[in-house]
Length: 140
Ligand code: GDP
Image (tube, rainbow, N blue to C red; front, side):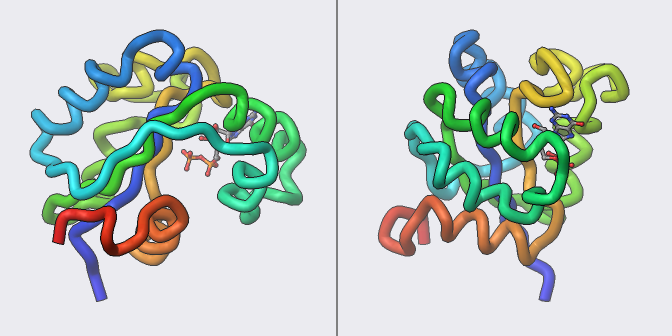
């Protein structure tokens, strides 16, 4: 069943650079509503769990180190067609390939430090939202 929610993180590079507010403004102006949000910091173990699907990839260890290197903002978002529309808003994984006007084009520093996460499916949006938030921490 399609859902109208997705999950994002403002990653350590964007948080450290003070771009969280500007990124959230772009997200809200694109029509997404914030359902849950918090600033937190992942341990390397939690980052490893979140990105477990990538554990065979050569960049996995670096990714876990990077994602636990500083605070992040975790956010559940709501909008019609949320997963697909959010992937369009953030742009390609590698900012060098991201379309003009996308969040990664504007804010990402590299293919790894690429400013934001965006769920790639409805199923993963639900899993990732539940990783960070209980039901009691969300807007109904
Ligand atoms: P996404 O869905 O666009 O975030 O991309 P992926 O699911 O393929 O990768 C997850 C995250 O791993 C990316 O957002 C990057 O932070 C990082 N990543 C992806 N590809 C590479 C790579 O080739 N090198 C490094 N160092 N990090 C990467």
